[in-house]
Image (cartoon, rainbow, N blue to C red; front, side):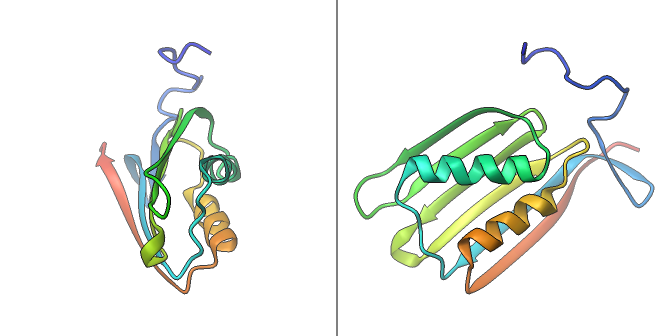
Length: 134
C-alpha cells in the first residue's frame, strides 16, 4: 500500500463523529498501575498489534525499544488511523498507553483488550476529542 494515498473511499470517512460534532480523532491517555510489565519487545509488539486489530485499525509499521535489563520498553504501532504507543516502567509496575484513532475504528475495543490482558490494579483513562472540525 502506498502510505501517501488515502485508504478511505468516502469523503470525510477518516473523521470521527461524536454528538453531532466532527473531530480529527479520539485520543485516549491510559495510565495502568499494578501490572506485570512484559520485558519482551516481541510480546509488546504483539500486544499492540492485537489492540489495533481489536479496534479494526490498520497497522502500517511497528517498533519497540528495550532500554536494558530491568528497564522499560517504549513501543509504537503506527496506524493508518493514527497510533497506539506504550512506555513501561517495570520497577514501578506501571505503563502509559496512548491510543489515538480516527475513522471507523473503536478505541474502546483496544482499551478493553489492554485491560483484559494486563489486568491493572488501578487504571486512569482520559478521553480527548481532538481537532474540532465544525
